[in-house]
Structures are given as C-alpha cells and as structure tokens.
Image 1: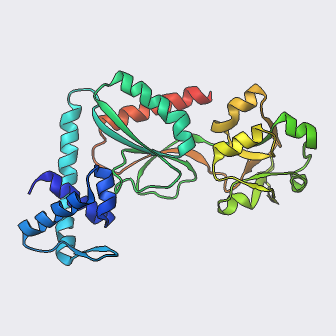
Image 2 (image 1 turned 180 degrees about the vertical axis):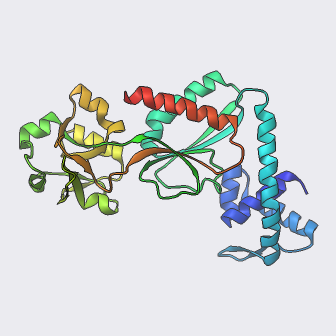
Image 3 (image 1 turned 90 degrees about the horizontal axis):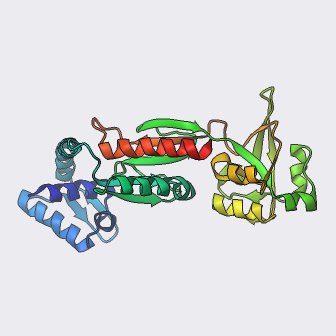
Length: 301
C-alpha cells in the first residue's frame, strides 16, 4: 500500500461517497473504487459495505480509520514543515469563502500572491454554503455573520455594519421613510433566507431594540444582486458595509436611519477567518491570511 491510497481511504471514510472524493482528487470514480478495493485485498478484509444507495464502513474499516487518520495527519504536517523550510510558500492552497466577498477581496489577494510566489497554486471555493474544513481539506475559510462553530481556529477580523440604503432616484420618487414603522409603506428588497426576509431590527442609542416587519415584491438570493437592484431604484435594501460603502461614498446610494444600528439577525455580525485545528499551520496559509488582512484593511478604510 502507498500513502496516496491511504489518503483516498481517509477521504472516502469522511465523505462516504466515491464520486465526491473523485471530484476533489480529480480522478474518475472508478479509479477511487479500484484503489479502495485494492487496499481491501491487501488487508484481507472489507473496509466498506457497498450498495446502490450508500457506502457504509465496516467495523474493521472504522478501526483502521481510527489508527490511520492521525498517522496521515502527522505525516502531512511533517511534509508541510519540510516544504516550509525553503522559506517560501508553495503547493496548493484551498480557500473557501462566500461568493460575493470572495470575488471582491480574495481574487485580488490571490493575484498578488501568485505574482510573488510562483510555486503557489490556489483553489478558491466560492459559494455561500458552510463547508467542512477538514473533510474538504480547506486551509483557510472566510465566514460572515455570527460564529457558532467553535471547533476551528477562529480570528475575528472586524465587525460588520449594515446599512439601510436606497438610490437617490428611488427616494426622489417615493420619499424617505421618517421612522422605521414607515418601512411598511415602501418597497423593500428581500433576502429569502429564514429570518432575513421577515423583519429588520433597529437598536437606538439607549440600547432599545425594535423589530420592524418588512415587505416587498422582489426576493433575491444574492447580496450583490440586491445591491444592483437598489442602485437601479427598485427599493430599499439592507446591505453590509464591505459591499456598499463605495456606493455610499460616491453618492450612488444614500443611507437611512443612521441613528440606529440595523441588522436582520443579531448584533454580533463580523468577518471571520477560520482554519482547521492542527498542530502546525503551513506557511502558505499564514502568508495568505497576512495578505488578506492587509487587503481588507486597505479596502475598507
């Protein structure tokens, strides 16, 4: 058996799906299946029970995984330490982030790193789903909002402020609501995900919080699209500072209710950098985080 086969075994154990592992490893599913079958033949026992619907580990497979996974983790970390001894980041860096934030902030960082470090390659997973950092072999992840998962190393970059904003054209046609209650008379651009589409929360200087019901005819699943609709004069939007501050500064969007702190969920919303809990953090991840922090600081000043 070789190390690559053992790594495939661990990936299959974590995902319980040959096809998903094949996509990540850029292999054919049949190649993954043959590798596992070869390992089972070498060990003289079945590691998985296969059916048309699911792939389940046997008792022998679970015991083997419990012994092999920590050894492979140590082997991987030892390899990263040796690679980092050359003093420059190299290899493949896997980064997960929300799509819009990644397009705005991560792509420029990656371009900068690639120009500086020719031996570094990057895989960006840009979508709004929360991924399993260990199962997906993610080196660095960005999450926005409040943080509930404490199993990762987390760094709070900064708080996120939300603005209620609208285009000058919309406000000229419909006027600006004078109180939060007057939002009921306006077209609000809705984000149809749970509590986001139901109400907005207003907190005043005395720390009093009021929940205001909102309504609108346009439900949009992407914050960048909501921004474009607001710029086009379609309605009022609740959007994060990192997305709309350039529009506010240029006058393309005007803010409302600046005397309040406004949110749709809670008041602990922030930009977070997450990394898997491991004894050794590779140089490529350290360098990426340093560049990202610098870029975010410059872009939001």
